[in-house]
Length: 180
Image (tube, rainbow, N blue to C red; front, top):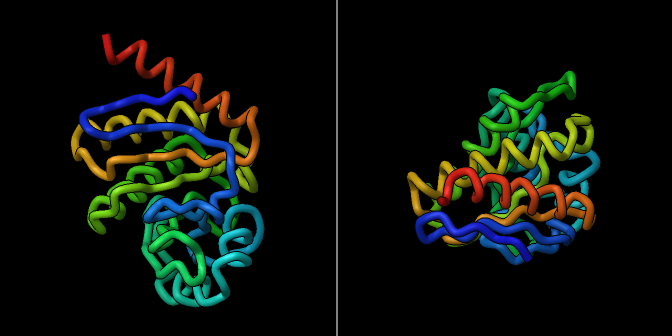
Protein backbone atom coordinates (compact mmCIF):
# COMPACT_ATOMS: atom_id res chain seq x y z
CA UNK A 1 0.00 0.00 0.00
CA UNK A 2 1.21 3.47 -0.89
CA UNK A 3 0.94 6.13 1.78
CA UNK A 4 2.37 9.58 2.29
CA UNK A 5 3.39 11.08 5.61
CA UNK A 6 3.13 14.87 5.93
CA UNK A 7 4.04 16.19 9.37
CA UNK A 8 2.35 13.64 11.64
CA UNK A 9 -0.48 12.92 9.16
CA UNK A 10 -0.72 9.72 7.14
CA UNK A 11 -2.50 9.98 3.78
CA UNK A 12 -3.52 6.68 2.22
CA UNK A 13 -5.97 5.06 -0.18
CA UNK A 14 -8.00 1.90 0.47
CA UNK A 15 -10.62 -0.08 -1.40
CA UNK A 16 -13.83 -0.29 0.63
CA UNK A 17 -17.41 0.96 0.98
CA UNK A 18 -17.16 4.32 2.75
CA UNK A 19 -20.43 3.65 4.59
CA UNK A 20 -18.64 0.79 6.39
CA UNK A 21 -15.60 2.88 7.35
CA UNK A 22 -14.63 3.05 11.01
CA UNK A 23 -12.95 6.46 10.57
CA UNK A 24 -14.13 9.05 13.09
CA UNK A 25 -15.62 11.15 10.28
CA UNK A 26 -16.74 10.11 6.81
CA UNK A 27 -17.37 12.51 3.97
CA UNK A 28 -20.52 12.50 1.88
CA UNK A 29 -20.24 13.76 -1.69
CA UNK A 30 -23.21 16.10 -1.39
CA UNK A 31 -25.24 18.54 -3.43
CA UNK A 32 -25.75 22.00 -1.98
CA UNK A 33 -29.30 21.22 -0.76
CA UNK A 34 -27.86 18.20 1.11
CA UNK A 35 -30.47 15.75 -0.19
CA UNK A 36 -29.10 12.23 -0.21
CA UNK A 37 -29.97 10.25 -3.35
CA UNK A 38 -27.70 7.64 -4.91
CA UNK A 39 -23.99 6.90 -4.95
CA UNK A 40 -22.02 7.68 -1.80
CA UNK A 41 -24.93 9.62 -0.27
CA UNK A 42 -27.35 6.76 -0.90
CA UNK A 43 -24.99 4.22 0.66
CA UNK A 44 -24.53 6.42 3.75
CA UNK A 45 -28.29 6.94 4.11
CA UNK A 46 -29.09 3.22 3.64
CA UNK A 47 -26.52 2.08 6.21
CA UNK A 48 -26.76 4.99 8.67
CA UNK A 49 -30.47 5.79 8.49
CA UNK A 50 -32.70 8.51 7.04
CA UNK A 51 -32.10 10.67 10.11
CA UNK A 52 -28.74 11.63 8.59
CA UNK A 53 -30.47 13.08 5.54
CA UNK A 54 -33.11 14.87 7.62
CA UNK A 55 -30.44 16.51 9.77
CA UNK A 56 -28.32 17.41 6.73
CA UNK A 57 -31.25 18.88 4.77
CA UNK A 58 -32.19 21.02 7.78
CA UNK A 59 -28.77 22.71 7.45
CA UNK A 60 -29.12 23.47 3.73
CA UNK A 61 -28.94 24.89 1.28
CA UNK A 62 -25.26 25.78 1.54
CA UNK A 63 -22.77 27.22 -0.94
CA UNK A 64 -21.15 24.76 -3.33
CA UNK A 65 -17.75 23.97 -1.83
CA UNK A 66 -18.94 24.33 1.78
CA UNK A 67 -19.29 21.45 4.24
CA UNK A 68 -21.56 20.78 7.22
CA UNK A 69 -21.51 18.09 9.90
CA UNK A 70 -24.26 15.74 11.07
CA UNK A 71 -24.51 12.82 13.42
CA UNK A 72 -23.74 9.42 11.90
CA UNK A 73 -26.88 7.48 12.77
CA UNK A 74 -26.04 3.77 12.91
CA UNK A 75 -22.73 4.08 11.04
CA UNK A 76 -19.44 3.11 12.69
CA UNK A 77 -18.21 6.69 12.17
CA UNK A 78 -18.87 9.36 14.81
CA UNK A 79 -20.09 11.94 12.28
CA UNK A 80 -20.73 12.63 8.61
CA UNK A 81 -19.25 15.66 6.89
CA UNK A 82 -21.41 16.64 3.92
CA UNK A 83 -19.18 18.37 1.35
CA UNK A 84 -21.24 20.15 -1.32
CA UNK A 85 -19.32 19.34 -4.46
CA UNK A 86 -22.19 20.36 -6.79
CA UNK A 87 -25.36 22.39 -7.02
CA UNK A 88 -28.79 21.36 -8.25
CA UNK A 89 -27.45 21.20 -11.81
CA UNK A 90 -25.32 18.21 -10.67
CA UNK A 91 -22.28 19.74 -12.37
CA UNK A 92 -18.88 20.03 -10.74
CA UNK A 93 -15.30 20.83 -11.64
CA UNK A 94 -11.77 20.88 -10.28
CA UNK A 95 -12.23 24.12 -8.30
CA UNK A 96 -15.43 22.92 -6.60
CA UNK A 97 -13.83 19.58 -5.73
CA UNK A 98 -10.79 21.34 -4.26
CA UNK A 99 -12.93 23.69 -2.16
CA UNK A 100 -15.23 20.88 -0.95
CA UNK A 101 -12.17 18.80 0.02
CA UNK A 102 -10.61 21.78 1.82
CA UNK A 103 -13.77 22.50 3.80
CA UNK A 104 -14.37 18.85 4.68
CA UNK A 105 -10.84 18.68 6.12
CA UNK A 106 -11.41 21.96 7.99
CA UNK A 107 -14.58 20.58 9.59
CA UNK A 108 -12.65 17.46 10.64
CA UNK A 109 -9.95 19.61 12.25
CA UNK A 110 -12.55 21.77 13.99
CA UNK A 111 -14.15 18.61 15.39
CA UNK A 112 -10.79 17.30 16.58
CA UNK A 113 -11.30 13.88 15.00
CA UNK A 114 -8.25 11.68 14.52
CA UNK A 115 -9.33 10.11 11.22
CA UNK A 116 -11.37 11.04 8.16
CA UNK A 117 -12.49 8.97 5.18
CA UNK A 118 -13.17 10.72 1.87
CA UNK A 119 -14.64 9.31 -1.35
CA UNK A 120 -13.47 10.41 -4.80
CA UNK A 121 -15.59 13.58 -4.86
CA UNK A 122 -17.27 14.39 -8.17
CA UNK A 123 -16.50 11.14 -9.96
CA UNK A 124 -20.01 9.68 -9.76
CA UNK A 125 -22.89 11.89 -10.86
CA UNK A 126 -20.43 14.75 -11.48
CA UNK A 127 -18.57 12.69 -14.07
CA UNK A 128 -15.12 14.17 -13.38
CA UNK A 129 -12.24 11.83 -14.35
CA UNK A 130 -10.71 9.97 -11.40
CA UNK A 131 -7.15 11.03 -12.27
CA UNK A 132 -8.05 14.73 -12.07
CA UNK A 133 -9.96 14.23 -8.81
CA UNK A 134 -7.08 12.25 -7.31
CA UNK A 135 -4.53 14.97 -8.11
CA UNK A 136 -6.76 17.71 -6.65
CA UNK A 137 -7.74 15.81 -3.51
CA UNK A 138 -4.24 14.50 -2.75
CA UNK A 139 -2.76 18.00 -3.17
CA UNK A 140 -5.43 19.49 -0.90
CA UNK A 141 -4.98 16.74 1.72
CA UNK A 142 -1.20 17.26 1.75
CA UNK A 143 -1.61 21.04 1.99
CA UNK A 144 -4.03 20.63 4.89
CA UNK A 145 -1.73 18.15 6.65
CA UNK A 146 1.27 20.45 6.28
CA UNK A 147 -0.54 23.44 7.73
CA UNK A 148 -2.76 21.77 10.31
CA UNK A 149 -1.30 18.42 11.40
CA UNK A 150 -4.69 16.82 12.01
CA UNK A 151 -6.56 14.60 11.64
CA UNK A 152 -3.70 12.12 11.89
CA UNK A 153 -5.20 9.86 9.20
CA UNK A 154 -6.66 11.11 5.93
CA UNK A 155 -7.98 8.12 4.03
CA UNK A 156 -9.34 8.03 0.51
CA UNK A 157 -11.92 5.23 0.46
CA UNK A 158 -12.59 3.99 -3.06
CA UNK A 159 -14.93 1.33 -4.38
CA UNK A 160 -12.59 -0.12 -7.00
CA UNK A 161 -9.00 -1.23 -7.09
CA UNK A 162 -8.57 0.79 -10.29
CA UNK A 163 -9.56 4.02 -8.53
CA UNK A 164 -7.30 3.13 -5.59
CA UNK A 165 -4.38 2.69 -8.00
CA UNK A 166 -5.08 6.13 -9.52
CA UNK A 167 -5.06 7.74 -6.05
CA UNK A 168 -1.88 5.89 -5.10
CA UNK A 169 -0.22 7.18 -8.28
CA UNK A 170 -1.31 10.72 -7.39
CA UNK A 171 0.19 10.27 -3.89
CA UNK A 172 3.46 8.93 -5.33
CA UNK A 173 3.63 11.78 -7.84
CA UNK A 174 2.99 14.33 -5.07
CA UNK A 175 5.65 12.78 -2.81
CA UNK A 176 8.19 12.70 -5.62
CA UNK A 177 7.59 16.39 -6.35
CA UNK A 178 7.44 17.68 -2.75
CA UNK A 179 9.44 15.33 -0.49
CA UNK A 180 12.97 15.37 -1.86
